[in-house]
Image 1 (tube, helix red, strand yellow):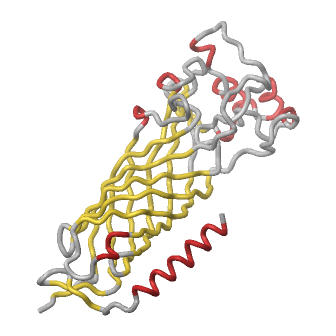
Image 2 (tube, rainbow, N blue to C red):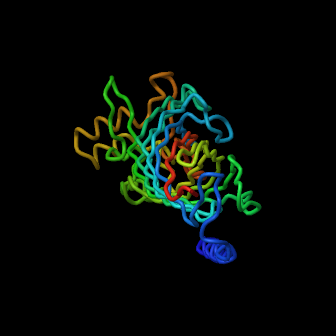
Image 3 (cartoon, rainbow, N blue to C red):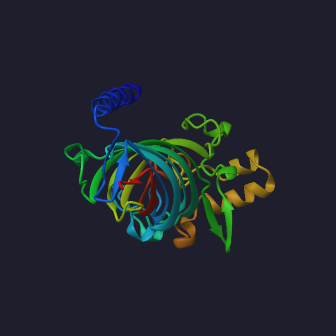
Length: 297
């Protein structure tokens, strides 16, 4: 991973060096001209969805019934309309239910808020062909790194319960050490990798619109609190407080609510697929204000 980002860094430096020979100012249209560096700040709204064990379709495909709203705010800079970077804050939610997914008998469901801060670089390849009279539309690719927090919850009798403290798969229990690699509860804030792209439309010298799709690769399998095997419910009593143990026994296995005759094997029946991490993505419409253009007369 470090080698990839090193190569990207050298490529970006070389590209910016080749562009630096252009004039400091150049015409945007017949009334305004651009400076080499333009600044943009704006906001966006859109849809957020997760790709997790719970609620996804067969083949770990996203379920379009699971879209939730998200919103963001960003500030950024663009060098000669070709390469730029922005800092973006995003807030949204992902959710899922087995009743809509590939494993209805498991009968689990969840929701989690997502709060993210990210540094995202963007590259507009078609702009390399233009200097003056720039086109209004510009497709671009995006790559970045982020830090996000989450907190999976399940609904029990109309009340949303935080799942991480309940250790629903025995994380950190001595009884699960023989088959489970998680020796402690999972962290609720982690890094992610962001990639995608979009198309930018210059409505005027001041206002910019964007349509953008960004995918987040995470390094956790617990966005939905499901990753491994079912545990013995008596282990909750041995390792948790009475209140937490009671909640855990009601929420770790809900298949009996759908089929009272169905029994999951302790330490053998799969509750989640630990071979695949959980991910999420956004589809957003952005509105930005551009600063740095000046009148040419």
